[in-house]
Length: 389
Image 1 (cartoon, rainbow, N blue to C red):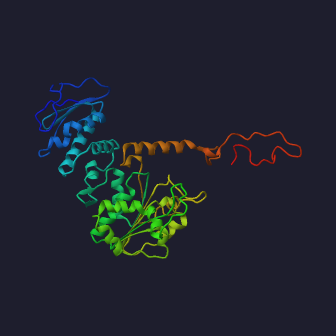
Image 2: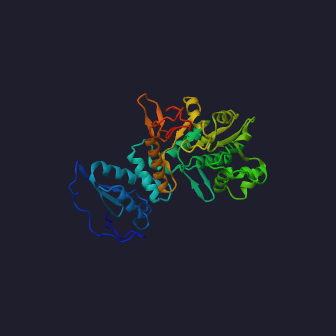
Image 3: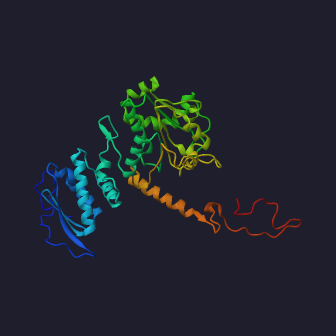
């Protein structure tokens, strides 16, 4: 990628050659088009310090020759890619015009949204403010997150279902704090089941509060990100914010409250029903979980799986499904989520009868052993044969 104009302040000096008059020959229809950046948009904000964002665009559009001169961005290459780049420049200009700082991650996510040809504009996603707190603004970063936030705004009960790192709990907490600050509710209730993540912790010393605190610590951490440090203890002491294990919800009616159930994949079907029927007047519920990380005892079906069948189509209930593309942690997390999804899919085998079975339970064929005296091939007195469950 070349940038003939080296007079922009804060921009690194790069190739000074002018853009070629014609694009090199390429397969299919090609074109050359120039986009003029709107007045008032600093090029340093659009292209990044040291042309950092230019390099991101270059990697995202390897088939294009892109040249920048003054406030003009010229692209030559396949027609569809040129049109997509033009839309990208428009979207990023709108984000900058809204006063938001562009990052390489924001550029990459904008390209991904444009390639998916969704109705929503990337600028609308990246400029949707959820909560302003402690000198920063919490916003959705992906299209799936935007739809999730909108569902919380518009519906009474929302299920946020998706892999780790998609912001299910964090965005729900931000909406809860926003509703409390706007006096839409009078309190926030945060809960999660007290289930170990595949471990056996054994006896925990201390008071009841000290015993359950490790399970609820992630909720406290999120509160600390969104409220001033001195506010959290005060609101907890006043009961304005309540953090409690799921078992404490039984027998209650939660009126005028924003209620969040986190780690809902670790509820049983009975617990899920109990929780949902706590809904009172003027309240809103958000249930979050990842059905691929169930830590319930063997044989117990996840309430988060069951409820998707039970409440499908019920008015006022929305299931917002997030996916690997919505992961906003380290980029490697998205790759890990997708790799595990492929691994789980490969383990599932469909038998001729249409029944699905788990490959883990399909061991080698049972080999008959020579019968002992007084015994038989079917029962040799040694218990299950190798490869059987």
